[in-house]
Length: 173
Figure 1 (cartoon, rainbow, N blue to C red):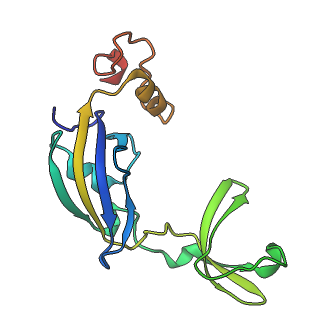
Figure 2 (figure 1 turned 60 degrees about the vertical axis):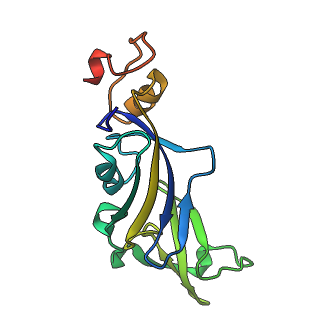
């Protein structure tokens, strides 16, 4: 079966940067699964695997614009040091999660002094060229549960399909 939109795909992968640093990889015997076209992975990865089949091994390079975007200067902000607990040892490189009026936000500390903490709200891989070493372990129609989860993100609802897969569900076409 060929990888197209609305197919469930499971991959073994290793993600490295131009420096050769490994930043992520699947665990042995536990491939990473997702539905193509559901926005669950970066666009560059989805585009690169379309048309491939189970068992194929590919190496791909994804430019920042098709990955996590370019790093944006407007996403680096100064936060008053007084917004943090006074006894907290804040160091550059520390990841943080904070609560905003719109929900949780993540940032990385770039610098800290007595008055301010410089916070970078860019994705940690923004501006990076991504190198994936991928083996396609599985390609199939998604299950009802997988499609229902996707449906909650604005896709179809296949709860009326009793076949156990979504490929024949009228709402998924």
